[in-house]
Image (cartoon, rainbow, N blue to C red; front, side, top):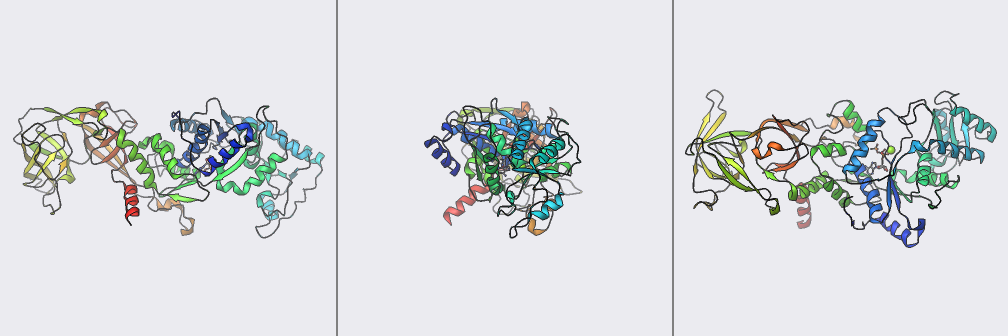
Length: 572
Ligand code: ATP
Ligand code: MG
């Protein structure tokens, strides 16, 4: 992170580290890693893990590695590797020269497997995957020994070498640890360490046709890199005894000054309401074109959030606020949106954009006259200064800011009523022009009070509503994309309801408004620039934007449901 002075976080993992430092465990070193599998793009759940691993390293004068856990070869890995690196960097973290690949250790893994075989702690098993499952037993019944469990060391060495040499078909044999088929922990019932798999690997090509399992490769990778605290999600809690078994039964050649044993620590994964978080499911949405790619602004991926306009600061703030727990829970997506609003409220310039324009002609304003009126860039942050916006005889306001037959509480424009135009004049609606056939409102004719602008004798005159507007002759064309949650239900992953998660997709998650108009100060807006459109929310320029038509994504609306929830909770 760019922050030089990160506060020491408050969480149970930090407490473990603090204790370890006090006891000079690991020679006082703190070394973590973020170990993504390059089988998809990173999502907001990974951001939690990234912030935690890199954050703990920073807070404790330690180091954090980026390690690709690429022991499971699949096709698109190169694209995923590049996207993951870009996302970690964008979040503000730096692995410096410590970029690793588990595939760098393939030779080592093999040697350690041979070491286990020689010690009589691993054997080649010819049972089929189906038989292995049957022999494993259940939570209530012990497993049965494989008939191949008693093979001699020589036979195992020979078979394992020939597995590597490609003599046997995929799936015909595996290497298993010899631990305990009656262990109450199923992960210790002779787990598979290696399988035969003829798939080209993105880094090692066709050099290997046997690949190590995660539970074997991970502890060794951690140990080889001198990791001290190996932080992972709760579902690995039951794998910890195996993690320890592997390290206890091989002689790791630790780097000389790095004599330490990594410790696995589990924390609760992040779940967010109204979205799914598994890479497999996200990939399904991309491949079956329910969304427009991994960086679709509706996706919970880091690249989607980035394109949507979320800031790394807001995401880091969110990860800090949700904390680190030992129990799984679901975080309200409104909290993430709240963090974004809080950040942008201070930083985003405020501009005027009319999303659904209604033409207004100010009959008593001189034709051809243009006034450049001064307005604040951000009243929350005066250091952002002011700018000039053009005012002229024909303007556009928001369609919803006018009603022909308004109810009592409507404080916008209506026949005979007045509103103030933000940083400009008070106008009064004199006449409505409608399409004779359809009755559709085409334009309004208004008059303005020349003394009502800043500095005029009526500048303080009170009217109930203030509206945003743009000058017709100066406005720029824009497309605005409004987003709603990708899923209609809080928990689309709920398997209990029997429905496929895709059945819960929100058909109205994207609304494209073409024909929007924005003020001319946005002429040079670049993809990634963020603004508050007055009264409409926060918006970010999309990469689809062109000189002819600017394209904006709505990041969030202005309605802060999280702040509201907090308020009701306090008062209730
Ligand atoms: P997925 O189930 O989405 O595919 P994964 O756990 O298989 O996720 P990995 O690439 O293996 O994805 O994850 C890299 C790291 O990120 C792991 O340490 C993992 O525990 C962590 N991680 C993954 N998902 C979450 C989450 N939702 N919350 C917190 N950490 C997560
Ligand atoms: Mg995984």
